[in-house]
Image (cartoon, rainbow, N blue to C red; front, side, top):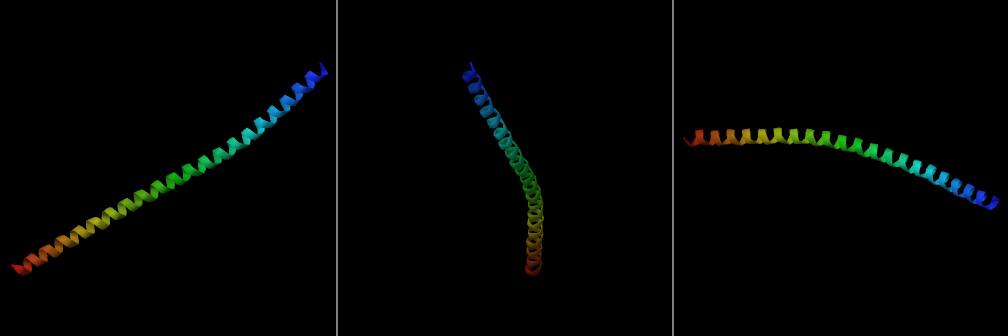
Length: 77
């Protein structure tokens, strides 16, 4: 009976150790997940800003081209 009790105690100690290690791995995974989420939010914000900036640059270029065409037409006429 004592041997069985000792075996059960050993198994329980191993299980407790595994649960503690699993908890630590879960904490690490949670930290990595939070970091990834923060990085994704920052990337999205920068992408929106860059998209807006490129849209304005494109608009400016279209206005400049239109002005050049108008000036050329005025010179030709």
